[in-house]
Each structure stands twice: as C-alpha cells, then as structure tokens.
Length: 212
Image 1 (cartoon, rainbow, N blue to C red):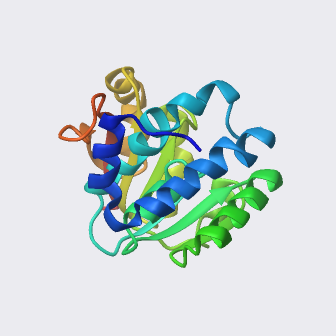
Image 2: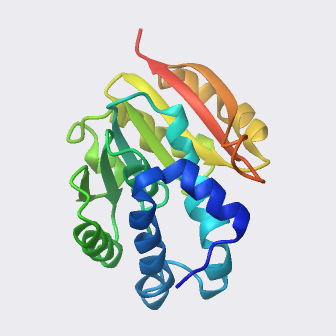
C-alpha cells in the first residue's frame, strides 16, 4: 500500500472527503498494474499522491457543478479519474487512443464503481462531434500551440480548456496566441489550483472559448 505523508493525508481528506477510500484504491492500481503495464514509471511510486493524484484532483475547484468534462490523452487517468473520484457530480469522458491504456482504465473504473465515467478509445481529433462537453482537460499531452487544436474543437464552439502546465505556462501562451484566437479563445489566463491544500499548487492554463 502506498502510504500518505501527514501533509498528503490532510490534503487528500480535504479534496476527496468521504471518497478518500476510492482514491486510495485508485493509487493502489497505479502502483501495481499501472507500473506492470507501463502507464507509470516505478520511480513515481513515492510521489503518486503529491505529484500526480493530488496535483490533478485540485483542478476540480475550477470546474462548475455538474459539468461534462472530456479528458484528452487520459493515459493512467490523470487528471480524468482523479476528477471523477473527487467530484461525483461531474461526468467524465476519458479519450485515449492506446488500447492497453483503455483496457486498464476500463478495469479500474469497473473496480471503483465509477458510474460518472465513460471511456472512448480514440484520437482527440476523431472524437470531435461525438463527445459532448463544456470543459476539456489535459495533462502532459503537448505544448499549448499543439494541444489547442486537439482539444478546443471538442467543445463545439463554447466552453473552456483547462491544461495542467508547469513553469513554461506563460511562454506557451505567448507562442499559442494566434492559434488560440483562431480557435475562438477570447480569454487565456494562468491559474493556481490547490493553494490552500498543497505544498506545491497546480498551475493551470484556462482558455475560455466562444465562437463569435
């Protein structure tokens, strides 16, 4: 079992509440079959909570109640499954092209009994028009200028992209400015999620989209 530090335990309790046991089971999947099948590197085990699960789950504070969310390039369920566990009011569509990852996600979703999750095996661009959402999320997929054309069209003309980023966020926004405008992005900002619960809060680029 992957133990939480005292600080992580406090944060996890606040973020997941009465669904903390589900989050713990998810982390066990990551630490066992997730590593065996190459979804997570073995060196990540000590950092699964802080660097991955809590880092992703705090993004939930930026999402409106009852939103339909599409998570592009879900991989090991980061951030998609973290959001689904933390926020049962959300409906998550996990979009992942690789079969072995899709199979793993399906097994985890079934084991955790998450009825607010749908898994779609597809490339993001092939899912346009087939997935209904008002929010698109992505983590560690690609730089913003490449990511935007893959994600924003899923919104069907209106909604927002929440991209988990690092220190290069502002630089990526500058490089992607023309692309974002072309895709209907009218407001782009760098937000920080989890400031009150995490030692290292999560940097998120939010792009609000509306086709004029």
